[in-house]
Image (cartoon, rainbow, N blue to C red):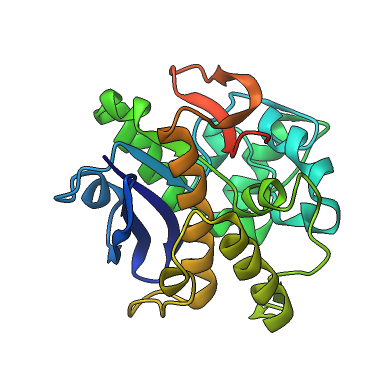
Length: 246
């Protein structure tokens, strides 16, 4: 069985594919679409992707329930968990329209951050893919890298950021690589690999974090927030997954 950890990048998506029974059999790829990763020759049976899946019709409080549940766990890293607004707001292609729609479909009224708006095209891509191929709903899982690292850090928030002012922060990157190495789930050669063209080092690191969750799910583990996962009005799962508690 193959699994994949996936993150967005300049080239579209970066994926680390791995054989569950042989961690030294793996490859790192970029692809223009998530569908291309799902249809790769390896046909990964678990795809852990750092991107929201399942959209609300309206939002109460600070985003979807998964975001509200994991944010307090992450300490100073909780700002990395964007509040995803309503489906109508995500479908808006203009920032002003997205803000107006988000405010009209949230209680209390909440606009959209520029960072959140930047990932809307990828959220729409996943949403369209799962609607077109509902069989993928049993293979594609939403993850968040900082929640994966929280689990790898014995359910403790990390005390170092991964980036500072948009630039990778060496101590924070090293901390996360150390947690990946300590887990024993991935070979060190992969943890310290260079990203392919079109992806940055932090994109690869986030994909590796997702890969640890994919491995855990494939082996019968996995921990969703909420548990059990919810469903949106279109039947898509609404949960952020991480590794199960030890």
